[in-house]
Image (tube, rainbow, N blue to C red):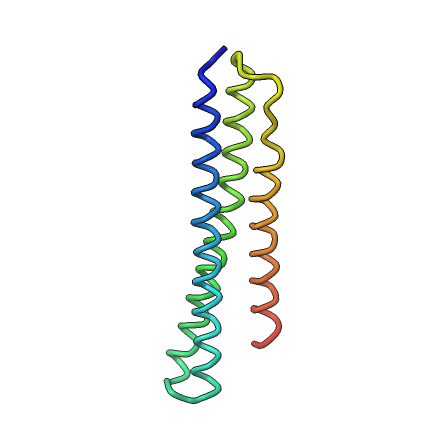
Length: 118
């Protein structure tokens, strides 16, 4: 049997990507809301407000891509390790599902922000 630390390292990598995706989505949300506040208080030009909103939405999209990409990559990697004499009782489902849910919720946030106030 292969060293179980390989699977644990893969899990830690997935968790690191999940944290990165969550940070990108959160930062994008803050940027998007800052653009909206600039619009409400008229403290910046319309071009600056629009740029801030678009930049915030781009960060949210980047976080969604990071979460989904990390989930897919981890699922493939875990499947390959298990197929090569890995532990038969290991299931990557929960960690992959959680990270995919993060990506789905980020996409939902992106759509809400894109179509709700603009």
